[in-house]
Structures are given as structure tokens and as C-alpha cells.
Length: 172
Image (spheres, rainbow, N blue to C red):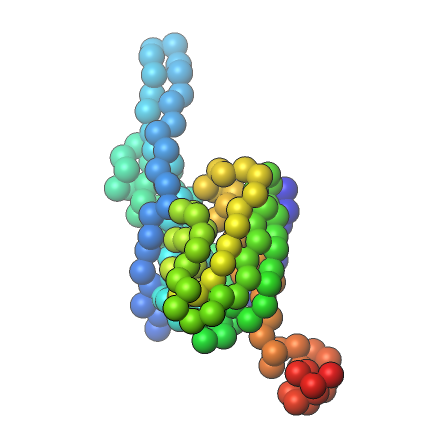
């Protein structure tokens, strides 16, 4: 499995909104019968460039969601935005899920599937074209989308890493 290597964001002074991506009923068969529990994957974000995901497991749905939100607040990353879209094309893979995303013109909207859509809406991206290939497992799709967003860099960061001025980034 790929490891997500990202910069962490502190949760102080952030107004985070949570979105439920998926809830699954998990069954454990024992000698005494079946034991049901729930697993929920949740995405939180401030719709201004900060997003995180979390997994919660419990015997009740509401408790699983609450645990997922708490876990998501521990895994926040900051994503550079460019006029409510991403600055450049990006692809990533996690497990069997592969995602591809590219910036879109203003007014296009979020053209993405369910699990990816929740991540984009939580981070505050309003115009993006995205495609998921391979596995449709929501857990791996969310992780692959976050991995792709963690690799996105804006022009100022690129200029700083290269040690050149901003006008040379665009003019070559």
C-alpha cells in the first residue's frame, strides 16, 4: 500500500464541515451468532483548501460517524487552490484505485464520482474534471484523491523550490 506523505495542518481556528462518504455494515460470525457493527468513512474540510479523511468503526452508525470525524481532524492537509480549481493536472494511485484530475474552466462544476466529489467539495474546489479508474472502493478512492491533492503545487511553491523569480516560472 502507498503511504500518504503530507504536511499536517492544525485544527485550531478552522470551521470544519463533515461529509459522510460511505457507511458499511460489517458482520462478524461467531459461535453465538452474527455480530453486526458499522464502518463509516468521513471527509472533513473548511472549503478553503484544508481537507482530511477518517474511518470510524462502532456498533452504532452515529458513533461510527463521530469517530470518523475525530479521526479525520487528525489527518488534515492544505491544498493550494487556483481560482476555485486545481493549478495543474494530477494523477495518483492508492491500492487498486487510480484517480486523474485536471483543472476546469469557471462554471464547469465538479465532474467527479461520489467519493471523489465529497473530497472536492470539502476542500473547496468548485471546477474540476476527474476520473476514477480501477477499484471503486470508496475507502481507496478517498485516499487516492487526497494523495493526488497532496501532490498539487502552486506556482509560488515551484518558484521557491527552484530558487527563481515568479515571472520566470511562466515565461520559461
